[in-house]
Length: 102
Image (cartoon, rainbow, N blue to C red; front, side, top):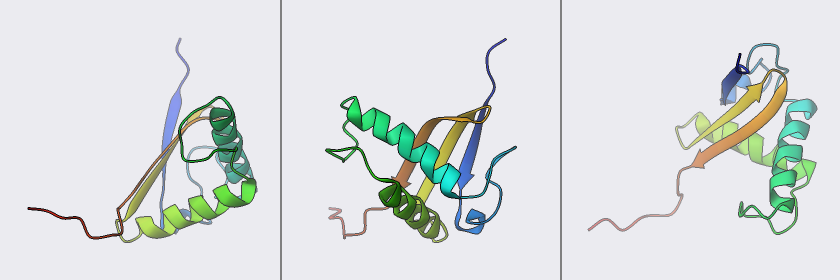
């Protein structure tokens, strides 16, 4: 039987609330798991915007900024877990500068 993958969207109201079945709040554990995943990808050469793997502090600020911006519809973040293990992270942020539209 294939493993079960759970998707959890992070929103501003979930800063201190559960983000999925059996998951902790947006805490050091969530930030650590996301940091480890992104650090592994960057160290393997993924083009994610970092030259060196990001620090725990950078990812903490990123996740909190994304959840704050999601309140206004300016960002969206999703974490995918297989059981308790984080296997994917995805985010979108609205471009903050004006865009030329002919």
